[in-house]
Length: 435
Ligand code: SAM
Ligand code: SF4
Image (cartoon, rainbow, N blue to C red; front, side, top):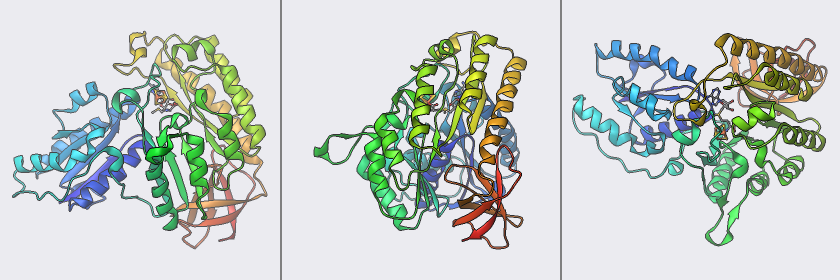
């Protein structure tokens, strides 16, 4: 039996895909890169934005066509809202809550028997809770390590608390053990994942009480080795001075911070239930930049939240100009069923959302290009992520994409690169100095 995974959305779904791979591999299934060869296809979707759910439509038609010619078990999971799951139920054989990933083999075997794939499926051991499902890492040099799941913040627009449940922190000792094991295997980049890593509260050993995110980072950072340590996502309301201190004194934590602002207007932030004001965000950024001068800053922002006036949007644009983000993920608001904002009228027209998106993108292009120009002539360290068409492409510790021409395949290696003239807003080019 062969399985194929299709992932939509963000890092959490990629991390879930690695857990699915382990469950199915342990169960004796083999992975395949193409749908054509698959007996089982698993779609990890995402209800965070309507656009990600819309992408499933094309797949439904493809699956139906294949099913006319041969058996195919279709499974849907991920961060999917109950209402979206309900709509998909008739197009998928199995619709599985992401928190029930451990039940995947039994769901497949039930479907398999029903579809008469030929005989019983042997049960090769059981897997318990979500955190106990160990991932089969896709890469042999970069790994996502989930440190918590769910969220208690209930931002008015967001489905995460509904699709992933309330916040649950993974045991610190398990996280540290996973990181130690990865580093000993030569992994070069570890990204700790959580919806709001700053509210992490894990336990180390039974008798030692709880551990904060700062302390957890400090413990991981003290593991000897040659690696970069990243984390996401941070919530501005919970970002402590202790964390800034640990970041600025660390050996492995990269000078890159993803700090979603979501809006640059106090009234909109209040309607979004973000629980901080623009002033707090600005102060925080200034503190971080003072402590870590080469820090690269990225953010998430939503345009066209219900009731967002032109004046309020202009405040966001002004914050974009003032703070000069190095990267931003700009989303046009989409109403999600069941969230608090779904009770508000989605009254910013689509064309206006697009216009606001474009305005922020233009500001971002300028500030990001300004930041990128500072690298010209510098020698930077790059972790090469792929080798394609005679180019090695990787990222700096500041999360900037760097492209360099080289006949050698340097994938998975740290290399030193001299940055050339003419960077674009979203990337740098350079030449190899040493590997
Ligand atoms: N936990 C992170 C935080 O506190 O910012 C964000 C997680 S969310 C899954 C990823 C991003 O999707 C958010 O930062 C937000 O910008 C965007 N997003 C979430 N819900 C959205 C919605 N209904 N419409 C548009 N964008 C949305
Ligand atoms: Fe969603 Fe807010 Fe939680 Fe982030 S902090 S996952 S935006 S509810």
